[in-house]
Length: 181
Image 1 (cartoon, rainbow, N blue to C red):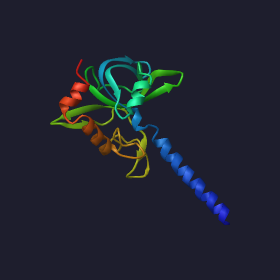
Image 2: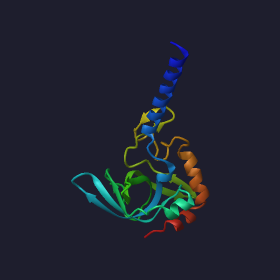
Image 3: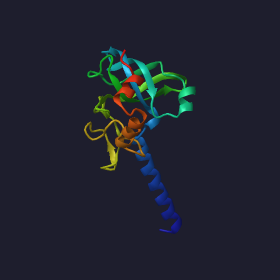
Image 4: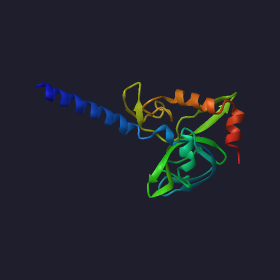
């Protein structure tokens, strides 16, 4: 095999590896939202839910993006939300469904967000989350293996929890930013 073929082979392997990781990590930290659940409309025919949130914020977006990006008005999911109820504080991953409807968002997964003794914690996701697992170096959607904020390429959930703690250093700060309804 000549040098050009080896280079091409190496290049293709790198591209395939990157695409495999990207397929497992479709979300970015900019798609992480926190909100209070106002209501959930369940559609029994197809496991879909429509959520109404209060105080919904994409917590890792830049300030200017928050000012100028369209505000989500419709929030849908393809998973059952049996453990989520009105007034719960949740953290989730959501993205616009279509660029022609920038206010219509699809929720990929979501978890309860808790704060006790000024420590923020995230429950296990209520919907399976397919993401890149750093430990096994493969795609994974095993509920106990992947935490909600573990599937990003750069950092794991511990890193993002630290960012949340800096933004909301106490439970009082978190709850005043997302007050009960």
